[in-house]
Image (tube, rainbow, N blue to C red; front, side, top):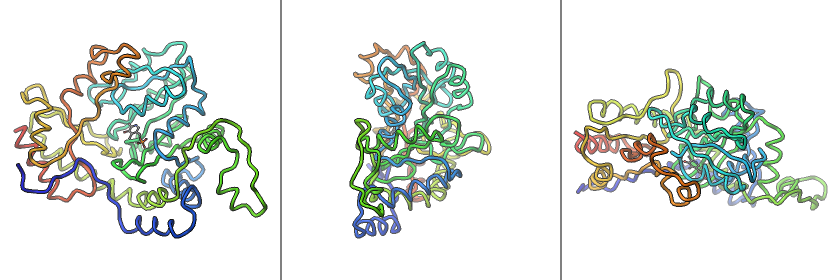
Length: 386
Ligand SMILES: *Cc1c(COP(=O)(O)O)cnc(C)c1O
């Protein structure tokens, strides 16, 4: 056992600026969606380098994915293709709309959805593809967008891991898909506690998502209460959802976004320290972004190579015994009872995801780690795998 305090798998980094902004919000009298949510949306668009792009702040990425698919018109009878190697939120939103999920396997090198398998899974019912930029490494979006164009499909990117990932030097969020959704959950590359951002260049899609974000109302509360003329009147145009981001959450987001470049540099430095320290071990190291591109390093995923006899579960137990939290991303969807039973899925249909799952673990990588924490993780991995 280690004498050092337990090093958790993930921790957010919240500074005085975030705390002061939240306090300012609490004192301002406007705690729900208002001026700070609007400012966060504008600053997010500026960060993407496209002030005109539509950014819609929501209370989770799950909500953003649901809104994006709803605005794409996905419904009963439709099929949506995504990867089995993801969190259930990616797929559950398809079921919210009564459409069906078609899961495909991953590329064994990148662990991202395999575009060849996407194309093979297309049927006359297919309406949409949801690529997931797993761990923060960009999916081959050139191939995915090509397939979508050829078959007339929509594309909604699950970019929960992918801020600020780039593909051919373009930020994820600015590519040619219908919508991209980021997550600001507590362990993501920046956080608002709970929150997400739906990004799109499609004005119609944005308009629908804004209305459905708040009960299907054609005017939000901030517009109504800040208008110069009496403005109690609104109309309900659809049975919408309650997915708006509060100004308290946006207060965090405004400052986390400012710090994102520094966060990214720190994540990159930790990832490079791990890569250098593990290169001689019987481990499969995570693939890097191509030269000139950014990997957001939301996750640092190690895979135990076949020559290493230790089992993955035992590896994680030994890391815990050394006082270090680890995780597994993910238990593939095809192994969960709901997805397995609904679509009669088995591991033999997803050999690459299955193999990766059995041998993978995610080790701590976050900006609040000290250099000593990083060295401690390195020493533990080397002792167990060496
Ligand atoms: C975190 C995550 C989500 C959901 O994000 P929330 O903001 O918690 O709703 C969706 N997809 C993936 C791949 C995630 O990691």
